[in-house]
Length: 64
Image (cartoon, rainbow, N blue to C red; front, side, top):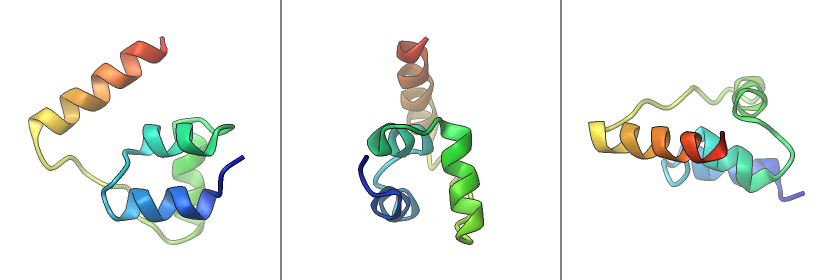
């Protein structure tokens, strides 16, 4: 399992989405990852653009 702290840092800096960060860690789903962020005082990130949101939707669709 990769470091949750590394994933949170990448997420906080906008380098990974919540889903990608959870996948990076390996054994968390998106909601568990966001819960871990909340416990550490990291607020959920918002999408900068419609394209960024679309990329997240496409990535989640592949998981189904």
